Structures are given as C-alpha cells and as structure tokens.
Length: 151
Image (cartoon, rainbow, N blue to C red; front, side, top):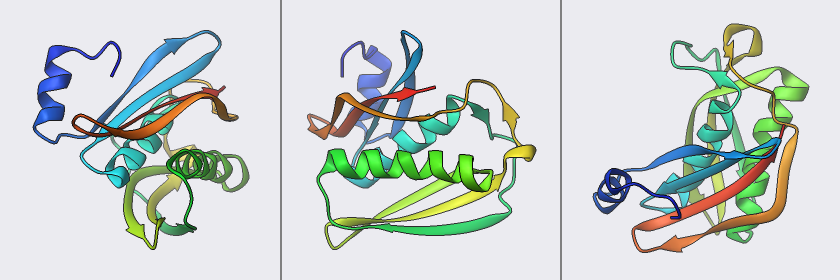
C-alpha cells in the first residue's frame, strides 16, 4: 500500500490485519488490510468507527447480524461501511467489534454494538462513503482497500 512503513509491511507479510486513517481534505481516508477479503472488510469497518469514536473501553450491549448478497468487493466494502453509518444515524449504535465471514459470494457480518451515548466521541460522525478513489482487492500480502468517508 502507498505510504506503508517497513513495520506495516513486515506485519502484513506475517498475516496481521490492520487499518489506519490517512489525512484527507475535509474527509477521512481509511486504508485497511487483511490476510483475507473478510478480514480486510472488518478492518475497514473498524477504521470507520475509529475515525469518530473510541470504543476501546466499551462493552457491547447487543449483537446484530447482517447479511450482504453476492457483490463485487467494492460493493461489499461500500455496503458494509454504509451499514455502520446507518446504524449510527438511525439506531444510535456503534460497533465495538466486527466479525465477517464469507457466505455464498456475499458476506455474513456480526456487529457487537453499544449505544452511541456509551462511547467516547473523538471526531466528526461519518455521513457516507465516497465511490471516488474507492479501491478494494487482492495484493501481495492478502487483501487491501482504501476508501474516503464524508464527515
């Protein structure tokens, strides 16, 4: 990935998943990676949460399950991140843990959520996912993605 440090490259070679926020004019750019498509998607969603909330000390109060139909990787990435934004805006829920699993070309997602009132807000709430410069796919170490989020 562009701008990746030697430590990040070494961790990726060992199959470690992760994400980081990258400065972007008036928005948030999330880069994520994982050994599998599903791990990369989960890391992107955790990156989205991390751009506006610190959930490190929060215990989930519910578990929500969502299934996404078969779609391209770009479509799955956008749909998952849009689901996080929807749960925040409509239900006041913030995922504190996310697990993903392949399901007939689509995706099964388990969101362990907490109430928005229970998390520490550290940034502007996301409003939506931009398709401009959205990237998702296999790379030399597994899977990686980059996406810009409107805040």
